Amino acid sequence: MERYETIHLNIENDVARLKLNRPEIANAFNEVMIDELNIALENLKGKSNLRALVLTGEGKSFCAGADLNWMRKMKNYSYEENLQDALALADLMYNIHTFPRPVIGRINGAAIGGGTGLVAACDIVIAAEDAKFSFSEVKIGLVPACISPYVVMRVGLSRSNRLFLTGERFKAKEAKEYGLVDIVADNDELDKEIDVIVKQVSNSGPNAMAISKELLRTVGDFDYDYLKKYTAEVIAKLRISDEGQEGLAAFLEKRKPGWIKE
Image (cartoon, rainbow, N blue to C red; front, side, top):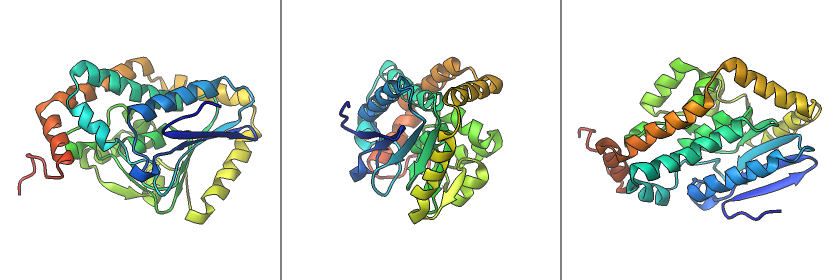
């Protein structure tokens, strides 16, 4: 099996378990993790005996969003570099969403920014009761662009609007009310709940499940090729804008951005 630097993949009893594996920084992602996740998903697509994919994080967090060191690099990227970087993230969200088997999100802790986007791209989401969520990008002058199609599908336009504009944090119980999470479990019952869902989907026809997912994408009538390009362009432009540069600088320097009045 292929070895990875930032993720861990295990396949047992026809179930793949894909784990974000950077617990020392709350599983924050960078370009390496995005690339490795895309490679792992592509490799798993060819396994016809697979029945389900469980996506989770190592340690106490699910995913804290973008890695600080990656953000320092992207601050100095050109528009073209930012565009290619954002397209890789857009591809990741698309690859999770269109994976031919059920993707079950095991949300074991905080999911922030792009980490909440990973949650939204999953088919079935089970979260620990102390998990926290936030679309925090506006706080640093950016927007949750590449993840937005999947969030809108999950929670709707009106709710997405409020959460995107405020960047507020919310708990698993609220996430369930919003439609982002399907099941909230006691922390020590999380794996038991995962096992129940895995058993349910394992008893479903694998080809029927793949067609079902494709059917819903078609009925939903999202132009994913257009959205991947459009959302990547939006975030690439913002990253090099005056406000985006100020927001990133303030975040990295641990100060308030210039638009906040003392």
